Length: 321
Image (cartoon, rainbow, N blue to C red; front, side, top):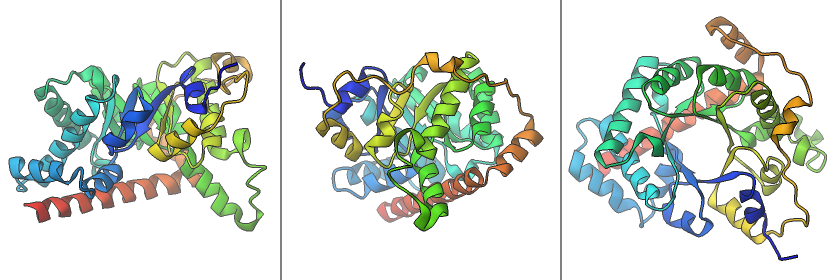
């Protein structure tokens, strides 16, 4: 039997997405799609290869309206990425708008208009929005207007269900950050070996969402995100999509796949455990999220971190003016 690495094996059942703003680094792995966020763009523009993108954007757009300059910069990165991947790029709405439905819709429409001006169709862009109640409502409105969305910072089952009910295109449950939280809570009691693979709490979260969506015929795509190791990734092989950092893509490429490799997830899993259909209104959603301490903490932490990095990007823009 011919040698197959884990990345090639994964691609047989899962759409592989590159999670990076460093578009030059992703080419060797031939991903279908790519995702970005403010933290990844901030990291990229501080490299010599990408600093000119920031300078050129600032010179062209100015800094009188930093929010617009930010959107222009994100779209410039997105357009460069779309020259290298055959599929879609995800571009994020400013996390500081995570609790403002109307402002999120307006910002998403502007980002999409900027892509359209560059000749990029709506089918090649996903607008990333935090999975707050307000963000999910914004996504529902955008989907109705033909703008596809990627609901990010998703940690709780209730977030996934609400996104599915809203008819969003794609969700990004964060595997590694869930793992981080439970590992920190356990402290010295954490057993890395026992909690690996299918026992990883982040992996289990995505598996539950996958089963529920397939059981109830929900068309929303599931894209596992935020991985800490390739064991988490392979434990979710067969998931609709997985977005993976270049470092972990390299590790997958260097690791041999087991002979007779079988994906961990498949639609037949939908029938393993009957799961009643759930619908949330605002009050029941907020209560369900509040009941999940991990999700509440990680969602708030994630929004703060993305907002802080957006602020740092703005400072770099001002410095480049």
